[in-house]
Structure formats: C-alpha cells, structure tokens
Image 1: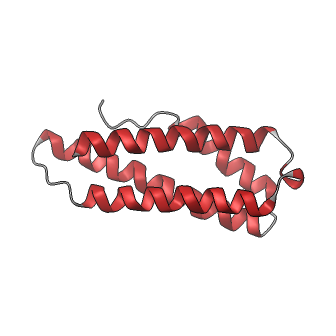
Image 2: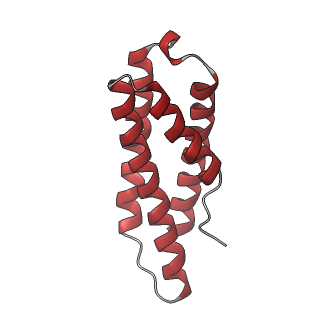
Length: 114
C-alpha cells in the first residue's frame, strides 16, 4: 500500500510541478482565473485523498521513517496549494511566484525512499 500511495503521490507531484512551471513562466494575469483555481482544487482534492490513504498505512522500524517522509511530502503539497490559492485569490502574484518557485526548487522529487 505504501509503494502504491508513493507512486500516486509522485505522479501527482510531477503533474503539480509541471503545472507550476507553466504558470511561473507565463503571465498569470493573462490566464483564465477560473481554470487555475479549478486545477488547484482538483489537485488539492487528489492529494487530500492520498493523505487519507497514507494515514491508513501501518509500518514499524525503518519502514516507519519512509511512511513519515511520505506523509510529510503530502502535507507539504497540501500547504503549498493552500498558500498558492490564497495568494492567487488576493492577486499577490509575486508571492505566488516566489512560493511556487521555492517548492519547485526544493521538491521536484519526493525523497521518500532515500
């Protein structure tokens, strides 16, 4: 179950990073606001589902560290999307970009299985 959840999160995280790179490189004011919000809400819902799945994983020993890393990565993504939605709705485009760039630079690959 952990490997499956990790793979789903990894795919979703890659999709998120690709989307963020697209948004960062374009002029956000020319983008469809409703589409951006809908995309973030969809990704948010998908990550919330993975959070619930990760809460069901039972592990001990060294596997526990991997599960905790997965949970941390999922929560980090949830906080990111919450921040980005907030900044976007307040039209704080520079804060939006800065937060997105920081996430992309630090989280391109989840580090669950180090």
